[in-house]
Image (tube, rainbow, N blue to C red; front, top):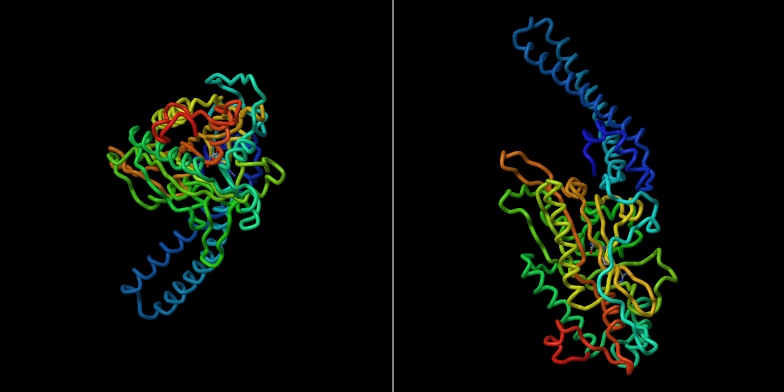
Length: 419
Ligand SMILES: Nc1ncnc2c1ncn2[C@@H]1O[C@H](COS(=O)(=O)NC(=O)[C@@H](N)CO)[C@@H](O)[C@H]1O
């Protein structure tokens, strides 16, 4: 969310962001509503002052004039009530439009309507050259009985799975290993709920707009979150954080639920795109200094690269375009991991800085050194999301006979060289 003051003073910048992020928001209507609301508030203030002046003069007035004064005060009260009646409706309409406004993207973001304008920043690790026909992760799983990808669908529907045996253990070991690594980087480990109120989805920017992607629990007015970011963004809503509390660094572990409503037919085979998965989320709340949050953006990205390097998974870093980064983002870098069976890189991590766009929606504030209360900056990045990360992990480290050689970092955890 942008402040009205910023919008009024930077109309051109906001127009450009609307165009570059490929969103449809009627800024003229928003500003017209803003003017109406401000005019109505000014009028109510003036009327209130007038009525106060009358009630002040009432005591010293000539008794004969009091009825007229009383009637005038009453009439003013009625006029105030009428204006305020319309005012709440106009304010709601104005707020609904404000929630649709994009955050201003950083000047280095490639301008374009979608992921086709994304840029590959750099590639890391060596893509494996197999001297045999590599298997895809489903074949490896079936050979080793590492999951149920079939029977479970009669229980839970499509895009569901049960990990089994050593692969189920590997997922737990992976998450624990990543949690320990992030703790060593100063992040506080948190388990966070997936159940959340609609207001938490508004705070992150998932609502309005992406309601279709979330499972709804109507009896309880709750939704299931698709990322731990949702609970973590609203955890401190309404608080005024002290400077010494910042930066807040969370490693949030949660189950994630996504309807994948718009993904029919995509990635239907295996573990790349499922309805329920587990993610360790890196989350940062820091002071609203662009240089400070840019530093945390780089750190969040480096943490994810550190994990991928230790998992010996080749990857590339992507600079997201204005159209692909999403409504509230200032900057987004995705990391795509190499998937041999697809002969391409596929997204496994997404690192975002949102400046104060979420903070304004979540009412997340802090008190600076001069005791001034300001909105914070928020950032998030995937640390690990499973089972998607298992796809490049299994496929890149497979052997000709269908085994999987574990990266050195995981061998102690899994008690051997092979899965
Ligand atoms: N349907 C899905 N199935 C499996 N993994 C998924 C699915 N949707 C997302 N993921 C994983 O979760 C990661 C983060 O998802 S994201 O929407 O891109 N970004 C976020 O959720 C941010 N909060 C950063 O984690 C993705 O990069 C991917 O690895």
